[in-house]
Length: 194
Image (cartoon, rainbow, N blue to C red):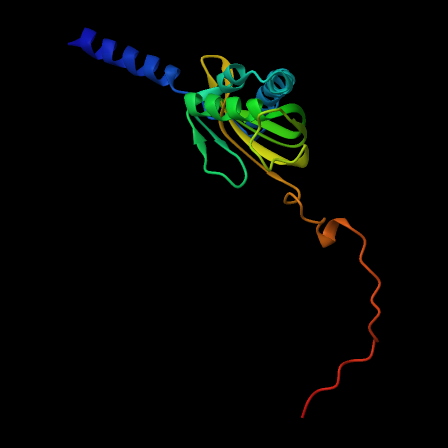
């Protein structure tokens, strides 16, 4: 009986030792800073490859950086879900445009297997021969993006990516981005109707 009690006591000590210890806020911050630094280096390398793959029209490579059920959420279109669908979407884009993409990470952080990246992009596209009629000869787009990353078996992959343009195609700049026009109206208040 004493040996059973000793064995149970030893198992409880081992189980307690295996439980994750609670981090202090300082320890959690230090861990997340370290994880975020490694994450930033990894996604910077992926970002450079993503730019090159976009320019080369390599849809298979672009799709490979998404999780199996990754989600690409382009503006003005339904979400594209899964590597196969992302491959097909990127192949369609590559068939229409010679593309140049520049990605600028503005903030990134990771904790364990999850990471978040926020940034801006610029895109230049020249329409290829055979593109659908009505496509402009070239496209220039600038905007912002947000990416939710997962670390899967030691590799950072995109789980969700959404982006949108700073202005809609063919629309003038918003009032917030251009100087205010001088008013030609009188500064007198309008008369009220009786």
